[in-house]
Each structure stands twice: as C-alpha cells, then as structure tokens.
Length: 337
Ligand code: PEP
Ligand code: MN
Image (cartoon, rainbow, N blue to C red; front, side, top):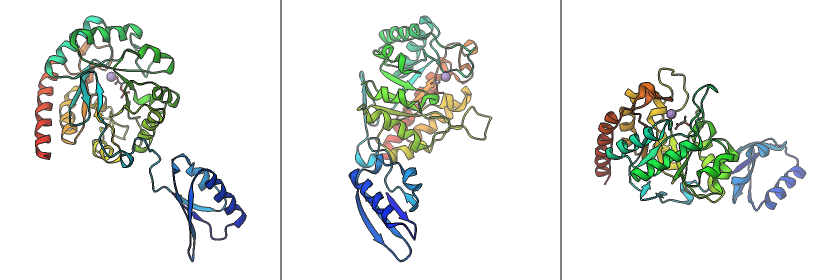
C-alpha cells in the first residue's frame, strides 16, 4: 500500500500514523520527493482500512498495490484448487456438470430428474429446498423435506448434491449435503459466510447481482479466513441495462478469476439468461472460455415447474447439450496442450 502525504503535513500527525502502522506490524519506507512525501507500507496490509487512512488530515491519497484478499489470491497459492466431492473432483481440468430442477418439488420429481441427468453425463445434482423468492407469496421450497428428497435421489443415482442455504440457523440441516450453495442474494451475508468458514463442506458462492470481482472474492475470503479452503465461485449473470435477458452473463469472469484466484469457477447459464433457448449457446461459450463446470436447470415438465420453468431444459434437451459440452471440453483441452 502506498500513502501519499499532503504537502504541508503536520509532523506530529505523521508520527502518530507511523507508530500506529508499526504497532500493526507494518514496515514503512519513506520517500521524500520535491513535491510529495510517500510512505511505502510493507507487510500484511490486508487488514488495514484504506478508507480510514485516506480520511486522515495529512493524507492526500492512498493506493493498494496488493489485493485485499489473501487466501483466495493466486499470488500466494499458484496451483489450482481441486475440490474432492465424493468420487468427483471440481477443478483440475475436469468439467463438472451440476444439473437438476430449480426447486425440489417432490421425491418422484427429483429422483426422476436425477436419473435422467446422470444418464446424460451430469456429475452432480442441483435442487433448491430453501428458495430465495422475490415474492413472499411464491413457492418457498419444501425445506427440510426437500433436503431429504435430494438425499434419496443421491442414494438412487450416486450423484453428489448441491443445494442452497439461506440462513445460519438452517446450517445444522446441511451436515449431509455435499456442496453448500450461497445464492446471489446472500453473497454478502457476512454472518452466513463466516459460519460456513467454520464447517468443512465445500461452499459454492454465486456472484451477487451487482458484485464486482473483488467483492465476490472478498466473500470467498470470509469463508477461507475461517479455515474452510473449499470454495467454488459461480458466475450467474449480473444486472445490466439490458432487460431482454434475466441477467447478463459475464463470460470475462472466467479468465479474470483464473488470473486472480486459484479457486474453481462454475457458470450458471440458466439464471444468467432466464430463457431455456439461450442456455446451450452460453454453456458452450463458458466451456470455450475455460470454465471448470456448469450449473444447469433441468425440469421434466417446465411448463408446470413451481420455479424457473422458462429457463429450464427438458431432459432430452439437456442430454444433447451435455454431449456437446463434453465433446467441446475435450477439444478445448486438446487445443491447449
Ligand atoms: C438457484 O440456483 O436456484 C438460485 C436461486 O440462483 P441465484 O442465487 O444465482 O439467483
Ligand atoms: Mn432457479
């Protein structure tokens, strides 16, 4: 971090700043120029409040040279993180395909979809039991029963399950879930993130609707700072001025995150577009751009789905797409070798 001092700064205030920083274990290199005095701060500056320093009377400007996230930062952990989930791995050159309904609606529904997506090549089953709905009058999910139905589907297919937690109070129900999803609306629920850092299950954090890469990585940092290194990031589209699609898929997130972090990246083209007929193109684009996996909504009867039918693929369409995705992934890997 670099602190640029005002020209006529008060020496007593400067001394105060310097000793405060030194108490925090920061080493200071001072460079006195003709126009400005600059302090170079060396050490772990991730815990310093940049806005607080910038607000000091004697400070002209402050610039970070190091990102504020450490555990998630590729600079301190150059190798890709590979997360073992039962007998499948997320990251490390594998293409993870999470598929299933938006919401678990019944045991029959989720078991039938699980069998279909497994036969098509899915490696994980998705399905919401606790649903974050915009309207309090909309279907809110089956809750604990939904989790039980997911476990039945896992027992019948062997597919690990990924499902969303909405509140710290629900966490004790998630002990037997394979990957815990944090939804876009909860990306900055810091109490929830902190609690997820103190348990061992892998956590998939979906990008907040208006979150920058740095804010998203800071959410991963919350979980990792608690000791849980098994974090996955999921790009699911962001809000832009375009209203034709539900959101705008940010494919640049894939190469950007690959540069900034070692964590695996998943893309959700279903919530990104809100339209089933756009899912194929964007899923293929994500694979070409280097995603570690996809999360795709599949429903056996989209017209009667209790949630997100318009963006759900029928099992037959998912089957075709999964074949294309696996073939493209093999081709992309071969080109990169
Ligand atoms: C979901 O995956 O069902 C979901 C609600 O997604 P998001 O949090 O990305 O909106
Ligand atoms: Mn959904």
